[in-house]
Length: 216
Length: 215
Image (cartoon, rainbow over all chains, first blue to last red):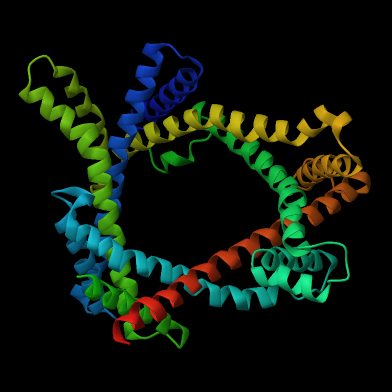
């Protein structure tokens, strides 16, 4: 009951999803759509559990007055404000939209742009051409970066004007992306997909059971 | 509302950039506000684009309208979803396995045919397709087609651990590392440029939009 039923459910839903994708029959497609809707209904409950954990963590921080506990109030303020304005009329609520556009989107973009500074120091460490492989990494990254900005072609067309190739930086960048980069990506995608497919088969057949956790 | 929004966005942008100096209360304020608002946004979006149209509306219609009782079938996934809360009771924690098993089985079943199609067949087709038009390709085109096949085979060889990487396999594996390094370099270059583009956009906002409201 505790382990066998979940294994059977996993097998039934897995096999059903495989077969319904190969059958265009209305009945089969009806099952496919209904089960897809079921998972869309079940998933928010997992989100509620995650939010409950977040609330519990910050509530404990406030109650125990741990270091920087005041910021946990800010978390609650942000969460409650968004839910209060959005829960009734949805994401189309004017205040909700305003908060999204003027508070959340700018912060999202700024946090990711902050990585530009840290990635620069990471680049310094990664790009020291100590070995042949590191040199390849350095050269391809530099060409792709220079090919992405107008100054790359400008410099080439100015300094290397005597060569017969115009806009060679962006052309070289595109060639790297379309050829050696794509071939290595394809190798990785093929390898990862084969591994993931075999893992999925193991899960459906009940060979891989780690998702059930420990205990009975 | 427009200028007020710009000032709020500028204040929060500067709060986050203040981290470049060092960790400080302004940054921590913006960080926690971002966390809270992102979670709140996720809750609203999940409820309004998932739960209400897929579960609440069909059940409400089934109760209030004649001949629409089939909507009550949505009570099954709701009951399964509620089993997630069994996690809160140590004695009934095992019940959480039911919804997890369904979600994992569903996603595994959904993944296998789509991965076979998109990641195996399509990628293999894309790799060997240029050879179908070999007669129309020039020397450079033939070189590129061969490079693609060599790159894919060597990269796969590097990840093939069932044989020892010695001799021919070792050499193929080393060539695979070279292709991987070029791939990682390109990905790194693209990531850097993407982040720099975001930085330019934020600086552009501060200089033109925010300072534009002052001067």
